[in-house]
Length: 158
Image (cartoon, rainbow, N blue to C red; front, side, top):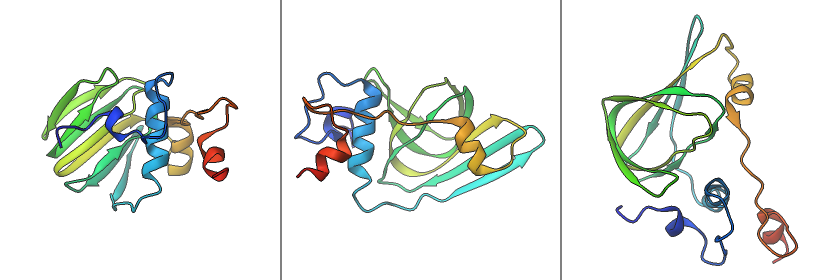
């Protein structure tokens, strides 16, 4: 899929010219959540002071990660995917490889080959629910019309 971009994934009935990248991705997430979802199994691993999250993403899927509050390691164990960066650049990521993500980054991926991806977070917390609250930033609420209604309310007005 060479045409993976934020613009191509935006619903055609939404004027996105005044939306930030994060707001555009939030709209895309809300739109894609209405479609059938592909199972991407997640495993959680803990060691003293470390939380490791492992996800399997099957080929042919679009995966949009959550916005992380902290800098953390990413390990692409195996597979091939393309990532769309906030500035619109595309990059292929092939496992095995390791890199660091900055805080505030949200990854938009197209999975070309079955991919196993791990993230590593320094923490003593072992509750996945608490870790979600600590590590994940809530998505932006997007106001999309002259009345500044959230997307969900606009859809209910139809």
